[in-house]
Amino acid sequence: MLVVMQSHATPDEIRAICEKIETLGFRAHSVEGAQRYAVAVTGDLRGIETCGLEEMPGVQEIIRISKPYKLVSRESKAEDTVVRFANSDVTIGGEEFALIAGPCSVESRAQTLTIAEKVAAAGAKFFRGGAYKPRTSPYAFQGMGVEGLKILAEVREKFGMLIVTEAVDTEALEAIEDYADMIQIGARNMQNFSLLKRAGRSPLPVLLKRGLSATLEELLMSAEYIMSEGNRNVVLCERGVRTFADHSRNTLDLSVIPAAQKLSHLPIISDPSHGTGKRDRVTPLALASAAVGADGLIIEVHHDPDHALSDGPQSLFPEQFAAMVDQLRGILSVVHRTLNVEPPKGRTQANTQAARS
Image 1 (tube, rainbow, N blue to C red):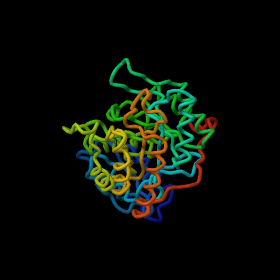
Image 2: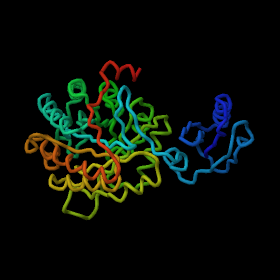
Image 3: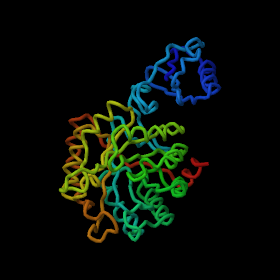
Image 4: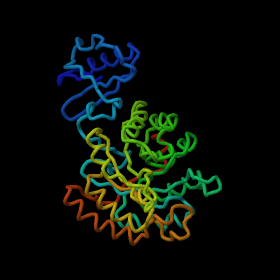
């Protein structure tokens, strides 16, 4: 349910609506758009009428939202969401196209700083790297943990890029809040509902990857879990799904990008690295992602992929990444998107810890 307020509604009238909703046993969520201010009502609304809300001062109308994902739906917010970051002018969504690049795993300080320097010079404003790695085999490299997060924080201080890194559980998420700028929820955890709820209570934006065999509705419902806890800064990510195909690691579903944009106001980016698993196919699918309207890319880059501890075969060499960015600029000009050429300003670690507290 969406309670649409009149244009001249006062703060006291809006507050009264929220209090009424809470007393009825539901949750109230402010939805502020360019053309209207509304309050979304979530909870089990089956059989519940408007409860007299339409008669309260400042209310324009009551709208029933047909989709099961209420806060994520365009029915609750018509305008595209632009995800913003503390102490930075870099965004995901809107006119600017987001570039997230880096290795699959943080393997060492030297490896990480080497790659960071290269991708920053090519135009990436976000640096990706896993300090915690969910692996199919329990014997595979699981990441450096907090030591890896400290290296990522050094990347931010040295090169100004914002840090995106994956949380595999709530303990890792709490550590990430001290060091990073964005929490990644990986494909294997897309339906880890306790982790989604904890991410929803975080001050950091969340990058939510589509599950290995998840439908679009399942992805949007997972985003709803995060947003229902209060975190509205959510970015969706198409990273390929499993199909019968054997010519690639996964099948990158580019058709889901415009479909998601029709149903939801949240930005959506593409991961052609995991979507193909093949280095020579990453650039073509990255360019295609931009052409169909993706809000950004997340690309794996490694200076020595033959010796990478994870995902070497799908990692671009730094010079390949730079060449891809050059090609990308031409496509972005056609779809009316831009790449910000100014170096970003990431949070200092002091600012990160202050934001958490």
